[in-house]
Image (cartoon, rainbow, N blue to C red; front, side, top):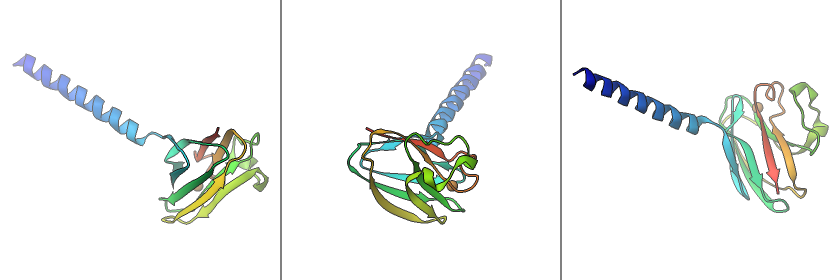
Length: 139
Ligand SMILES: [Cu+2]
């Protein structure tokens, strides 16, 4: 009897561990990319934090603002990464999907001619500091 109870507890423990691991995997930011991909924005994160694209090819990016407030997806010029939002000026922007209202979906295309690792931010005030930062690698 006691042994059976212990087995049940052990089994519950394993199930809890597995479900936690699956949830963590589903929630955590991963990577995305290719010649077309989707970025979802919300308060205050992108659904991915890494994107990989082929340099020199037209990339189609669908941006979905799933949040309540405006968000954008701005690619920072090579070598101009910022550490905090207060450093940002429009001169930092190489290209961006401009700010969109909550619930809006747009698709835009851009070609990253120069290979490199680009910082991606939501440049709206406070959003970088809240965590809306990622990396795009063109290679
Ligand atoms: Cu934002």
